[in-house]
Image 1 (cartoon, one colour):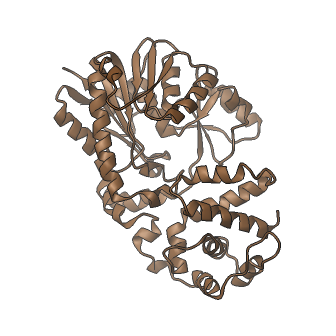
Image 2 (tube, one colour):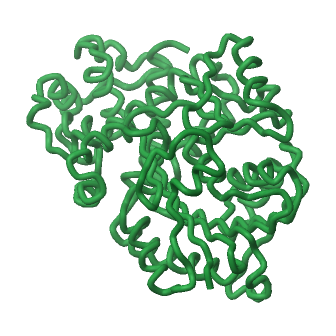
Image 3 (cartoon, helix red, strand yellow):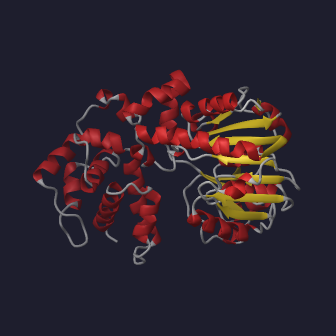
Amino acid sequence: MTPAARIQAAIELLDEVLATDRAADGVVSAYFRPRRYIGAGDRRTISDTVWRVLRHRARLAWALGTDHPSGTLFVAGNLVRGEGKSIDAVAGLFSGAKNGPSPLAPNEKRMVERVGTRDPSTMPREVKLECPWWLLPKFDEAFGSEADKELAALDSEAALDLRVNVLKATREQVVANLTAEDLVATPTPLSPLGVRLPARISLGDHAGFRDGLFEVQDEASQICAQLVDAKPGFNVMDLCAGAGGKTLAIAAAMQNKGRLIACDVSVGRLERSKLRLRRAGVHNATLRLLEDKDKWIKRQAGTFDRVLVDAPCSGTGAWRRNPDARWHLKPENLDNLRATQDSVLDQGAPLVKLGGRLIYATCSLLPEENRQRVEAFLERHTGFRAIPISEVWSTVLPGASPTSDTFLTLTPARHGTDGFFVAVLERVS
């Protein structure tokens, strides 16, 4: 593809992303799937442009002087502000040549010219930090003077983390295999099962992935699964299992011994989970579709050693991987999510046996979805107590706990992980 053709493809793809509330990664995959004629190098260039624009969406819109730029304006503005091209060079690429973008209209050209002249020091805080204005006070509440640092880290590109499947391999073997392929693979600092690759690469066709030697899973999510402390022979429920990332990790910790039930309300997510479990060699897990007012779950009361509630949440901790998600979030979404989080905690509590544990987790960094939800739960359920994270950490993970707080909050700025919250609650009566 010519440079102009790649730019036109990026514009088309961005217009599709901007026109839907679907996650951008799904839109990108759907765009490339029928276009087999686009080679791997061109795909990477096109997708890099799209992700760069999405990470700088608010700053580019501000520089262009419009609240709702088109894909054309975003890409042209990125060429000036992100790649340092002159307006003449941009005009040369937007020439109307075959397979390339049409020439910029006079008003579009004026807006693109403005991009190179606007003073960044006059940029509003919410624009500079790529954060919806109404969320800024919530990050200030969570992090105080460190809020801007945390938001800046959430706008960076995440490394690619893998979790070694200990049912089939060791971390040393996986690192050695990847290193032999000239990939820079290093052990993650917190998770003893993690391997980090610095670049975003496709591993879907990699032999190690196909053979179930490793799964893609951020280090924070790995830590969450290990803090469940699921032992061989335990009865464990993953109440909001999704596509099964933590289910896989828990099954490996149980060494395929015991009873593991992965529940979700989505058939599609459970189907994807089934494929992953088979690839990983897991055979102690049962998948169950939850229905409204499910009587089956009531019959399981008091039978589980561990119940993981990885609750639906805002996903603010995963903005590094889903930069477009911040613009889909609305205040009313948080209201609904808090109600759901309380509901699934209340649903999970009766399932825990005396002496067992309820683990609450989110990939959010907002206190109202994390600490406040746990504190409200403990007021409603006096038969549970919070176990300090350092106490659990010392029994399941190497090294010292990264926090002295009762609950665990991992962040990209402090720990190099996605933002993640974990609370471990023990049933004492």
